[in-house]
Image 1 (cartoon, helix red, strand yellow):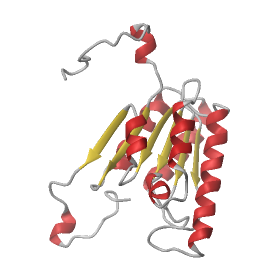
Image 2 (cartoon, rainbow, N blue to C red; image 1 turned 120 degrees about the vertical axis):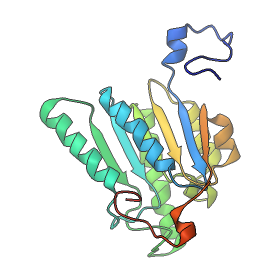
Image 3 (cartoon, rainbow, N blue to C red; image 1 turned 30 degrees about the horizontal axis):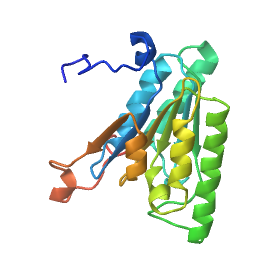
Length: 204
């Protein structure tokens, strides 16, 4: 479609302004890297608008040092000290479990993921944030740890101005169907194809 132009105007009874400010459900899926990076880029824009940001990471070990986490924590401190931007919260749901270094049983991990989702649901129902990043959230959905139908119901029924961005491979079809914006990352080339491992400043 032309840059900045819609392909058609729906007959939904909304004004252009109402339609333009409607909160979005966004899914970043696909096999290639960049899904979380794109989501955090959106969160940066939201912070600049003064929105409350809530980041909830799934399938990341508490021991991993994520560059975006440090940056957003610094932005959160800047907001607290100067009022610039918006408040930021960063949570690792089910701290210590990951697809790379699992500790405990699978049911332990599933229970931690479900508790993480319950906390997110509570926040959405109380309209606590204006931008949610549910990072790698597709994995507990894919593994059956969290009910997809419940997630779709909660997200599509959310009230107020709450944008939600979900990242991860293999997003469930029902989630894709419910989303307003879906992108799928595909690989053209990658340094790993030539035997190069991830590096600081690029992967983390």
